[in-house]
Amino acid sequence: MSAERLKNYINGAWVEAAGSDSLEIENPSTGAILGSVPLSTEADVDAAVSAARQAFPGWSSTPVSRRIKSLYKLVELLKQNEKNISRVLVEEMGKSLPDAAAEVKRALENTEVACGMPTLQQGDKVVGCADGIDGETLRLPVGVFAIISPFNFPAMVPFWFLPYALATGNTVVLKVSEQDPRTFNLIAEYIDQIGLPPGVFNMVHGDKQVVEALLDHPVIKGVSFVGSSRVAGLVMEKCAAARKRCQSMGGAKNHLVAMPDAKVSEVVRNMITSCYGCAGQRCMAASAIVGVGDAMYETICREFIAASKKVLISDPLDPAVADEAMVLGPVISARSKAFIQDMIETGVNEGATLALDGRNVSVPGCEKGHFIGPTVFTDVKPGMEIHRTEIFGPVVVILKAADLDEAIKIINDHQYGNGASIYTQNGYYARRFKLETECGMIGINVGIPAPVAYLPFGGMKDSLYSDIKAQGKSVINFFTEEKIVTERYWGEEG
Ligand code: NAD
Image (cartoon, rainbow, N blue to C red; front, side):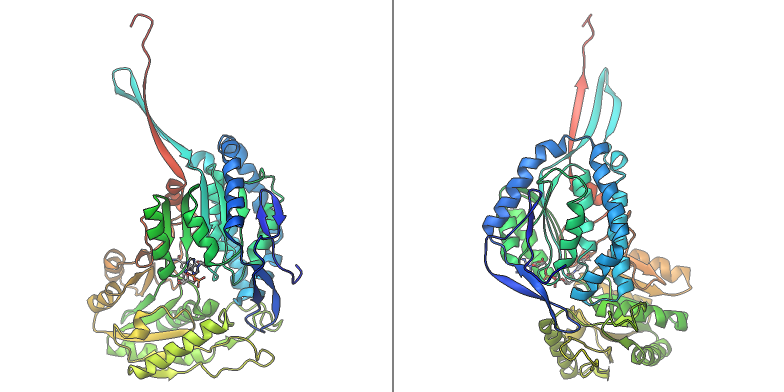
């Protein structure tokens, strides 16, 4: 892929954006410029939505068994090109190559699940609701959907929605993050080869102007959004006002609770990958650890800090580390790095102990990269700003709780409720944690409890501003309209 300005994909063709403004796309490890992304305008959005609207009648009436044939081809192309996609992803996003490969695999698995749509989209039928009367539920496609995705999983997040929207018979306009758009641009080159009729899938590049145009467009029937809670809230409000369907997934602050009986050596290794993988920029990354009881709090502080000091910090494309899953790469941008540094300063000012400071880390040969080393605060009290805020970097806060009740209270009092995990061998503690913790995704001795593709993915509270999660059965409900038919026929004698 060359370092040129990306094009939009509209009506089955690659087209220049109407607007002339662009943003540079940067390699966050080296600062090298990889290309530029157009800041498309309302006119570009309108062209994409019009194409999707025109494609809808033909695509929605194509038998589902035929619709999924294209998705089978996409599965094959994703498999064949996994390495290529992963490399482009790492270049512009900065996670490790094994992490990128795992992300592409999850995209592929979502496509595989959507290939089951002839079964998944089935309705219900009651024979005999009354004398000679049958009742039937049909699950029908709805129309044109917008999908808007964040920077941290540029390949996977669109796949939480896209294959399901297409397989159920809808048409789509996708807007990926302007910070790392080359990954999906490449995937769109494969989508171009799977035989979808023109207009069924469209992609418009840009920033919030594109999002606003999509939200304001009267033809768009529903929006799947993933990003920060601030924007997720705006998206939800706009969709509600315009009476569009909406699933809007926001930020997170995920807690890991170490009970007094936790297996410390296993637990610390598990915590390290959860907290520092993807430089702490996963929505399921843990960033708050709760040690239960004085002894476990002291042990976790000591062992976690010792392990944090050993984390490998590097450009993930350096051949020396390319196979290492746990490489701490850069954060996405200079802006993000400045925000994280400010938050570290805030933690110091509000009285937490900065036990490990990653601010002055340097990576030889990557002087222009946006690196922050593992950073750990101890003596953190619930409600401190470094505990409340999603820092979205390799910064971990460690809190102490007297018992399980207090640990659960710390989590439940928090505004976010995406994921939380408990480390224990005790079934009673685990069961209570599972039932009482107000988070959408729970781990028991699992540091990143991200559900597999055939189960729903999504949080609670400020992590999800809708009652519909991604993936699984939920998303099929989102992309289909239930129509209920009550029918009877009179016989000749009637
Ligand atoms: P972001 O909110 O800045 O951007 C997300 C999308 O919204 C992008 O496509 C962007 O162009 C657009 N956007 C940004 N500002 C906008 C505005 N003012 N109006 C309209 N559109 C706007 O998020 P990000 O920094 O790209 O991604 C990181 C965030 O996403 C984190 O908060 C992370 O927790 C969250 N996230 C959540 C999940 C989840 O499952 N809940 C998954 C992945 C990421």
